[in-house]
Amino acid sequence: MTMRLEEKQALVAEVAEVAAKAHSAIAAEYRGMTVEQLTKLRMQARKQGVFMKVVKNTLARRAVAGTSFECMKDSLKGPLILAFSKEDPGAAARVMKDFTKDNEKLVVTAVAFGGKLLPKSDLERLAKLPTREQALSMLMGVMLAPITKLVRTLAEPAAKTARAVAAVEREHRPDHASRPRAAPAERRERPSPSGFQPPGGGESGPCTPSPKKAPGRARRPSAQARLVRGARTVSLKAASSRI
Image (cartoon, rainbow, N blue to C red; front, side):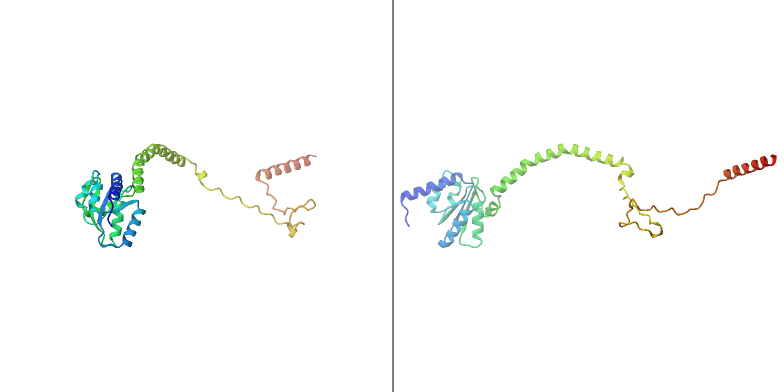
C-alpha cells in the first residue's frame, strides 16, 4: 500500500519525536512473519512500555537523523521494525529477545544504546539491565547504606555501655537473689484425739471441745536441783532433832 506524502511526513515526525527521548533502540527484519505474529509482538511491546513501529528503511533513516540513534542509519535495511525503550533502557531488548526464542523469522539487525551502535550479540546484555523499579531500589540501597552505617556507629557506644552495666549487675547480684524461692509448705491439720471429728466437715466451732494434750514424759531434774533438794532435807532433819 502506497503512502501519501503527508502520511510519510507524519510517520517520520512521530518516530523522530520518540527517538529524541528514548533510551535505547532495536531494529529488526520481520520478513516472512504473519499479521498474527506481528500483532502479538506489538501487544507484548505495549505491555512493556516499548514504542514499536513498522517503517520503511528510507523513512527510518530520516526519522533517526539528528538523534542519538543516527549511528544506526547504515544498518537500517529491508522491511524494518523499530523498537524504542521510552522509560526502561532494557525493555525493547527484552521484548525482542523473548519473541525471537519462538519466532526465528524476526532477526535483529541493529542495537543502539547511549548514542553508540552495539554488536547484535549485546542484545542479551542490554536485556539484562535492571528495570526502572529495580534501578530505583538499587539506588536507594546505595544512598541508604552510609546513613545506616552511621546510625549503627553512633548507637554502638550506647549498646556497649548497656551490655557492660548488665554484666556488672549480674556479677554483683547476691546468690540468694538469683535462686528461686521455695514454695511455702502446706499447713497440716492435726488429727483430733480419739478420732473425734467436729461437726461441719472438720471445722472447729464455738461448741467444739478442744482436744486434750497427750501426756508426755516428766522432765528429769537437773543435778543442781537435786543438790538443793538434798540440802533442804538435811537442814530440816537437823532442826527437828534440836527440837
